[in-house]
Length: 462
Image 1 (tube, rainbow, N blue to C red):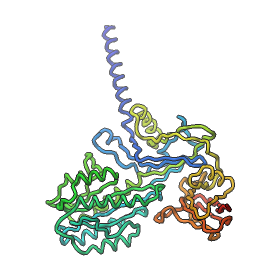
Image 2 (image 1 turned 180 degrees about the vertical axis):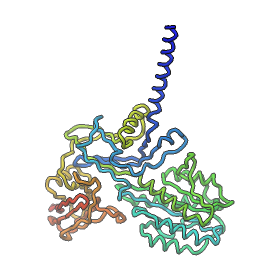
Image 3 (image 1 turned 90 degrees about the vertical axis):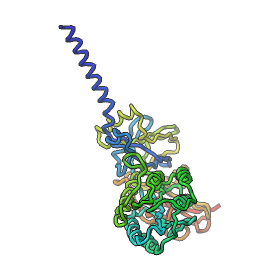
Image 4 (image 1 turned 60 degrees about the vertical axis):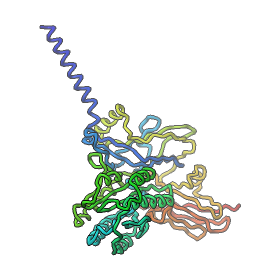
C-alpha cells in the first residue's frame, strides 16, 4: 500500500513539474512582444545618447497565432523604455526624452491615380475620394500626385508639398481620361524612382518614410514593365506600396497582393478594396489611418548618460510593456527566447561632460567645440562657412521641448531650418555674412520648459 502511495505521489509530482514547466514556457507569450527595426544611433557632446528607430509589436493573440504578422507599435510612452549601461539599469540619473512621430519625421507619399478609359464616368468620384484623403493628412505628410494610363513616363500633376489647397487644386485639375491601356507596373516603377530622387535631396539627419498609394480598377495591359521589375526595384529601395482597388472583372488580386508591402491578418499582401466608387473614399480613409499608425511607430529617443572619463561602455535601450508584472514576464521571455526588442551599442565617454538645467547647444557634432560652447556660450565660424547647430533641453518639466523661432540681434549671421518643410527649430543651419571678427547674439527659447539661452556667434579674425 505504501509503495502504491509513493508511486502515486511521484506521478503527481511529475505532472506538477510538467505543468509548472509548461506554464513557465507559456507565460512570456501572455505579454506583448516588441520588435525594433530601422534603428540608428549616435552619441553627442554633453553625454547625450540618441537613437532613432521604428517599433512593431506582436500581441499575445498574434504570438499564439504565429501566422499573423506584427503590427506598428504606436503611441509608446517613456514607461515602455528602459535603459541599461554596462549591464546595470539606469533611471534617475538620465533624463529620458522619447518623441512619438517627432516633428522632424517626414512622410513622402506619391499618390498614383489610374485615369485610363476604364474609369469612365467615375472620374468625379475618384477625385472626391482622393480629396478626402489629402484633407486627412497630417502636418508632416508630403504628397506628390500623378496619374497614369498608358504613359511610359511619370505623369506628375504636382510634386511633393504639404499644402492641402495645392493638392486639392491638383486633384481637381484631373478632368480628362487617359488612353485605352494601363501601364500599372510602369507607373509604380516610375514612382519608386521619383521617391529615390526625393530621398537624395533630404538631409540625412531627418527621419523619413517613403511610400506609394496606387489606385487602379484594372490590370497592367501595356506590358512595358514586368511585375518582377517592380518587385526588384521595391526591394532595392525599401519603399512601401499601398494598393487600393475598386472591384472589377479585370483585377488580378493575386498580383495586387504581390506588389503590396504590408500584410493582412493572414500574412498575405494587404490591399484596400472598395466594392464601388461610392465606397472609395472610405478605403482611402482607411489607408490614411494606417499611415498615421505607421508614422506613430517611429521614435526619437535621447537620454543623458551618467558615464564620464576615458572609458568604453555599452548601453541597452529595451522596449517592453509598461506594467511591472508584464514587464518582468517579458524579461523572462527575453532570457528564454532572445527578443529583438533592444538597441545595443558601445560608446566612449571621454568627451562627455555635465551640463546644468537649460538648453544645450552642439555644433556640427564636434565634441571639442560643443564643450567650448557649454563653457563660454560662443560658437566660432570661418567666414562664409555654415555650421549646423542642434538644441537639446536638459532637466525641464517636459521631455519634449518646443523651440520658438530664434532671434538674431543683427545681420552679421543668418539662419534657416535644416528643412524648410519642418515646423520646428531644434536643427538650424547658421551662415556667417559679416566681416572677420564680427559677431551676433542668437537668442533661443524653449517655451515648453520656459528655458532661454543666448549664444554668441563670432567670425574668426584669421
